[in-house]
Image 1 (tube, rainbow, N blue to C red):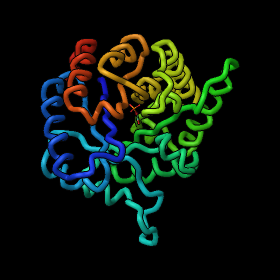
Image 2 (cartoon, protein in one colour):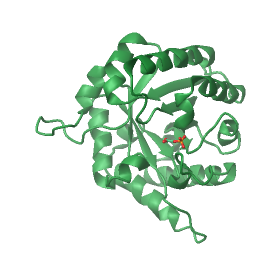
Image 3 (cartoon, rainbow, N blue to C red):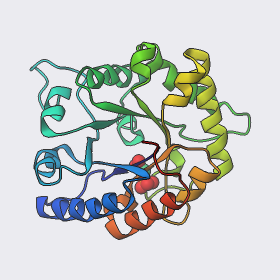
Image 4 (tube, rainbow, N blue to C red):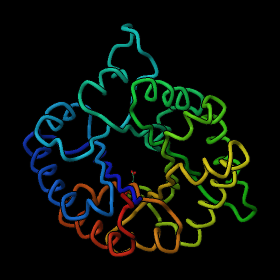
Length: 257
Ligand code: PGA
């Protein structure tokens, strides 16, 4: 199964624009639904109204509170996200890590989400690469933080997104090459195998994210060995996102029933 996750980031401003975008996205979902599972992670403020309008699109949130009790002004608990219609939630996005979020609290957020049957999309990624491969220890530590809290049964229920920070957003220098993506997918699967089992390594979907476009998307799947993609800016342009989905669909086999 190919998992295509859109991350709308902090956009759009208006509810009407959000509804229009979701409507166009649901047309895409319909066209590829036999081959691709599409999720869109939207700003929390839009979640409730979008869930009511479009039950066909899998909706996700972009972060969750670490806490479930009341004394946390400004936070959205997993219970609230569930009630608003979130089935997925991104945690540990590099734009949140850049504001000071650390490994252990992010890992605990995975537990909060799983308690409410929301699938965590746990993001990992190095800020920069070095020729000696020390950046691999960043990924290893990020994964260890969440795996240290998850039993095999819980680990099976998460999604991992590899998003190198240097490849994300408007300031990106470039996207990862399919070979860089493939190496990282192998590295992550090896860590999952060593921590849990080969079976669990085959179960957890691994996504690639960072400057994914309709032109390069299929390479991350066909050569990069990713099970799916986390797409930021392009997911805000329904036409491009649709083309991207179509191109990936050409490279995948239909889901087994
Ligand atoms: P981008 O962002 O596709 O715009 O580089 C990816 C993300 O923020 O997850």
